[in-house]
Each structure stands twice: as structure tokens, then as C-alpha cells.
Image (cartoon, rainbow, N blue to C red; front, side, top):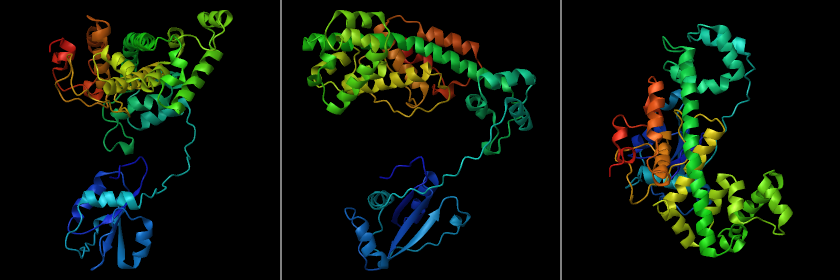
Length: 408
């Protein structure tokens, strides 16, 4: 089935009795247009396994109608019934469309915006209705933080339709700065908690790998990994890291030993966490992977998925990327069964709250009796204006979830 992409695309299919469902699909997706193929009487339906050649051979037997989503004429739909006994469903139409055509429609335009100074930005924000009590202070923030970074926190203050760039009545610049400060402190909180998980996972991979293989250098042995290409990339990253690091223990190893690479427990201290997770995902021995994941009471697939989530969240915090009101791009794998307290309420896995739940899950194993929830309460108490729903928190009683309360 065709998936909505970031850019405008064409979908091609049939039109018939189900025309309305096709048009509804157009209005609910990111497709800019759908070309409906209206097959004339006695012309058999095109088979999914046939490709563009089939279209070319039969173009004289078909007519085409294009519906553009943003075209004012789109409302003037001419319904041409399909002269066929059983018109295909929307699902069949989309599957056929995906096999025949998937045509990018270029709508890119040259970037023509000019630079605007902090002083000019202050005047622009005021002209759009944003309340600013101290021009020099706001100009200072725009100079040292940047309007582009702050714009994500200003966006919720815009009135609907937001495209008009008019701020709601009573919206202030200080409200945006409040969200900015909250987001900063939330990143610091999560980064500090992820540190414990990162260290524990590194050691689990090193210990189990060394124990089962009996080889201190198993991390740099190609025989221990599934994908040679991934292994080669990992080795390249390891070589680059060892070449540029100035860590005393690496210098000591190079001066003392003849081995090309240090043993696993030294490597694990120098490699970025993303490389460590890539090493785990490429391990050939299923027994090693299973033993590592079982040490955190997870199956292999969810454990690997959650490591990726932890890595993405860690990097976002480390590089000062906004996590408040953000929709992440990776959907975590949910375990088939959970042996430890988890969630009962439906939760959006693309929001930071779900990432916080994963962090809490690991902490409950690594650091029983941890104070993560107390830190969160303190932060939320300091910023009562923040809507926790923007983080993906349930509407109520999130603290009563088994994960947070410790009750199964």
C-alpha cells in the first residue's frame, strides 16, 4: 500500500462506485493528487503484477481524471462510473497504484527569505501581537539563543490558523521562554538518568560477550558478526575513535601492547553509545544477544528497539534538541509479554513520555529505589503552566501506572 511521504506524490488507481472513499482518502493524506484510471467497458482490470508496459498498451482503452487536493476545481467532481461488474476496493486501488506509478511531484521553490536582525525580529514579533515588556532583554535572548531555536516554543502561542502568524490575545514572549527553560531542564534530567542505563548496557554487552566467546577481543573479530558491511563500518568507526582519542588508558595501551585493538572492556569506554548498540544488533551468536537482553528482562527485539530509543533520546539531550512537544521518528517495539511492572493506559509511542517510561523501566532494574519520579514531580511543580499532554502523558493518574508506582 502506498505510504504518505514528506513530499507531494501521485497515486494512480480506478474510480467507480467507491469514488467517494477514494476522494476521502485524498483529503486525509499528504498526496497532492490522485489520477483515477477509468477503464472502458469490456476492458479487463489491469493485473497488479503488470507494470508500465501494460498501461502503455491499454492507454487507448482508458481515460484519466486527476483530482488535485489544493485545486479549487477539486470540488467540481465529475463522477464517471466504472463500466465493470465489481469495482475494486480502495485497498486494491492503492495496491495497484503502488505497483504501477509512484511519481514525485516537485513543488520546491527557491529560498528567498532574507536575514532579519534581532532588533528587527523584536519589532516583527510585536507587530504580530506578541506582548514584549522589555525590548532589550528579548533582543538579548534572540542574539544569544536565536529566533529559529525559540520559534518552536513561540509556535503554540499563535492563533488559528497559525499560517497567518498572529499571536493569541495575551500571548507573551516570557511564556515561550518558560517552555524553553522547562525543555532544557527536562533534557538535563533525562540525560542524567540515561547515563546509568548507558553504563549498565555497555558492561552487559562486554561481560556476556567475553564470557560466552572466551575472547577479550571478540568485538573486533569479524567471525562474531552477521553483516560484513555493518562490521566494516563499525571497525572504521573504532579505528577513527582510537586515532583521535587522547584518553590516557588508550595511550597507555598503544605504548605497552602490540595488539591492533584493545580488549572489549577498554573499547566500550571509548565508543559512542550508538556504536555500542550497532555492535549488539550485529552479533551473530543468538545466545549472546538473548543473554544480554534477558539481563534486562526483555526479549531480543524489544531490547534492541529500546536501545535505539535510548540512543536517540540521549543524542537529543546531548545536542540540546527540543524534546518538549516533539514527535519522534522511531516507533518502539512493544514486548509481547512483560515480567516487570509496565503501563496499563494507552500511550503515544512517538512522544517523549514513552521514552521516559523506557528509561524508568531500565532504571528500576539497574537502580532499584531510584528517584526519577521525584525529580519529575519537582520539575513539574516548578513549571505548572506546562501542559503534560504535549509530552504524551496520559490525561490523568499517570503516577498510578504500575511502572511508576511499583505495583503490578
